[in-house]
Length: 182
Image 1: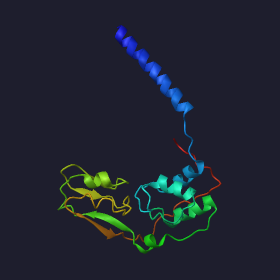
Image 2: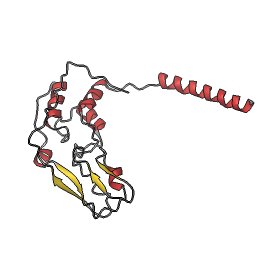
Image 3: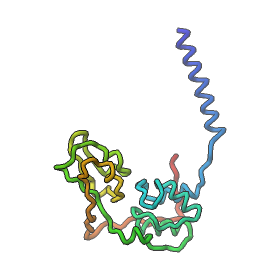
Image 4: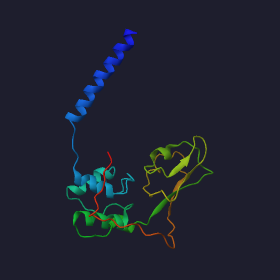
């Protein structure tokens, strides 16, 4: 019984020390970076040239262009321009010329290795081990990150169909504060 008591006491002491250290040595983030990151689509696809949305938000805060995010599109550029008080610029040349693409898995050739599922930053690929996989078209950003890990090359990129009409996205209003969840 004394051994259990000693373990509980050690757990309480170390828990208190960790709690104190978390408060004492807390590193505050840049609120501007957090606001920019909240506007970005959080696809973590790397199409902007950065490994994710947070590094791109840091680069924007340091003066990089706001027009490098294809998944964010024109609405994202407009929201960033409004937030930062910058001029709205069209999507960067390399992203603007490239049509929106979607991943398409030739299911008859899929071996169910799940490597594409692990590589997809937006969880647009569904399937189970040793069973065929498929892509959720509404979630796919066309980032091409699923292509290299596929051992049988059964994934193609096809042009995304253009909808005849879709609901407009709500506009970003910089006067409304963004609540950041930690």
